[in-house]
Length: 434
Image 1 (cartoon, one colour):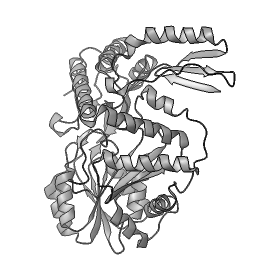
Image 2 (cartoon, one colour):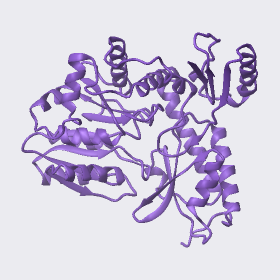
Image 3 (cartoon, helix red, strand yellow):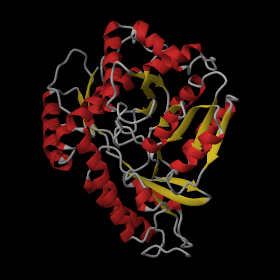
Image 4 (tube, one colour):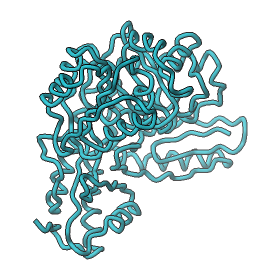
């Protein structure tokens, strides 16, 4: 069975052995603009193909605009990449594919291949947190978790589940971590060997000053592990310049691939030193996975093959478009979303100067007719996904501008959001009690 896709289209050739002209995916250099203008031309091309090949079935795959904090709206190229030939992941060809991905992930964060390495795992972004916290704690040392949001709270939870010796510095969730509080904690706890925090708290959009924090951690002689799941490939990171030892992410976030594959990127020397640290997990041990890659070229256990091919395509797109173009696009879309939702009266939870420019958190209006579920469902039925949350006991929803989105997507979403409010009886502009 031959299958090809082009953005929202999927073609299936039922008869074995037939060859039909390839239909190419979106050109990443265009920044994904102009897709709507190409649709009519694409439809004509598909009709010609279907006429020439009677066994060809054409099925439309609707495009969804995902405004949730991952997975992201994918490009046609990434979707198409999953349709690679079936392969045993123990083949040399697949090991070569994995090696190239690992090398290029280090490039994404401007690491030095002699000093840094990337170690993929099967799982969501949380597996990276689990791996780093249970694998990288030196004997007789403790972890310091800098907690100012839901995802750093998750790090503290992992420490508790493994019964890892740790301290938690609880900080306000509506602002970045104050480096002076970190300095004081490191002075109070001289037995800290690993400091863990989140770069971009996805629950609120708060961006933490990891460079300033990292300088303090390095001066204290501890390892600095940062959850960059919601910032890697979306905001600048440089492992050669930033005082950070380990970063992490998952394929479906900033690189806009598919779920099921995550990765830790960091210092080779620390990973190799951790071979002598206590082993707390069979599957989620960083050194075991790293060592297996280094000695065999393969993931220790069965990888998600199609997700690996998709990640390869997504990394290629990342470099083809260019990181500065990508970063600017995210900020442009966030600024547009902010203007559109402000026009509807929505109130942001976090002051703009504390935000990443990737996630916008909005308080629920106090209008008695407001129902997030009703508004969500109205938008979802029209192709837009928004995401709920709760911060400091306050209900909120989030708008995230990752993915292969264009300004027209945000404008169309704002129009649908306005329709949803009217349809559910919420007065415009939306109101708040105080």
